[in-house]
Length: 318
Image (cartoon, rainbow, N blue to C red; front, side, top):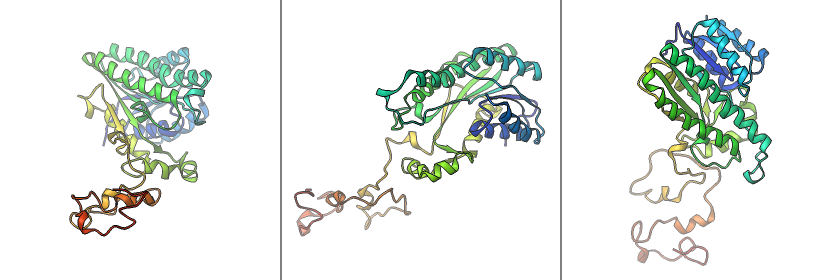
């Protein structure tokens, strides 16, 4: 679907997870690759698979939060390949402890921002300068739906970093647009890779995620890979400063139901909903009984209904 033949793509955080998926996809699309992350051993494993697709791959281990490492990786990329056509700014860390903001420690805060924000910016700056000098290029930042608004996950530092990276995407997408460098981002929802699938499904997190997502399922790796390839490709040549949500509709919703709304049943006789829809994470609660028949005078004639436990009583007043 996308042709990256003759192009060099630098991918950060390429040793596992989404980064590994991006590397395989770009190699399959004909790109040559520069892969970086902290673990050389893991990078070598990814590189071997990509070389099997015919890609020329340069592995340069480094820590995105260390400025000298960033400069070294970019220099090695240009020395080995002559140019960098695309940057996939993917490296990131989070915090799975569930610590509330009022108790969040600065050590963890600084560690997350050093990778997810400062590290991402240093790659933007150094690769961006190279692209401006060569007269063009495409950058895709991996942001997150957590950078778009509040959430219940207690990951305040990650939320702050990804929100800032999204704004940097908009800013640089405009600042560099007239000089041939496009900067866009993808904000994934919950995407499962084979590495984390057993844990997510074993803990039941996949069902919880589905309960808050309009598409009612978790995202799969190819569903984030293809949007990234699109924004990096010439097919998106008139797109810059754009953040693309890939989240099953999560950010399109003002919250989304986990218990099916009773009003889905109000017009069952006159205008029924088509299709079974989402069953919810639990049955409709008893307090729904007060609303079961609908709105008096609109859905039914209250004068024609005999009072019963579904419409009256101390706990169920219309």
